[in-house]
Length: 324
Image (cartoon, rainbow, N blue to C red; front, side):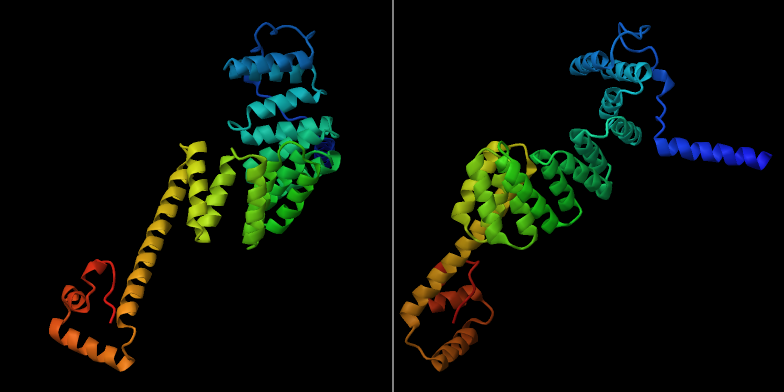
């Protein structure tokens, strides 16, 4: 008999889990919603809107109590569960995920909510689960670029740039207002695939769509600097600094560009000095140069200043090597 009772309890627990039994709401949230502590007449939508107003006023604890009241008064309505989950997405992520998932069990055809749950899962570093939720959002909202955009971002996070590129291009097919950000992310995916020429085209498309998007300017500065196109890179470095002056990346990009400019300047100066020497000594044979080196080193030893003086290279500067 005792075994039968244990089995029944276990079966009931499994049945409740399968049905998606509602998670518990902390008892301390009872009777904390201003003006609505002792009424059940107010709708869940009204409590939701009131809670949002409280949050906008910086009164989040009271807003959370209103969302909890919406759940207690209307447990079959999803909006209270969604609101409470969103309010606690940073302070209590584990419960936030449970509340949001339960809201979706009550309202399973809401593509936007699947996308939002994906965002929460990605923030919790549960990337594969986030991908599945974003895929559900895409199926429910095939014309919504945001769902594709989020799905592409998750593929990028998981190190799948080819999948990200495919999804971002789907987002571009349906997007009518946020082309710059999508093109920017297409450029990122192409870059991770080593297709830098195509990435540069995508970044230029992003810049054309929105020249004020700082992220694109950072990316264009990086690509042009890496390719040695420093004059072109400078424009994007300065734009990135202007658009996002507090972003440390702007300082890093400027430093990277300045280092490359300095290195290019030194290289160009050395090439100029070598050309100058060749114009003067180009008639000398290899054997004559070897003899000159023997004589100069025999006279100067390891004194580079002495060598440069004898070779007419005293104006070359300390950073330039002696050339025989």
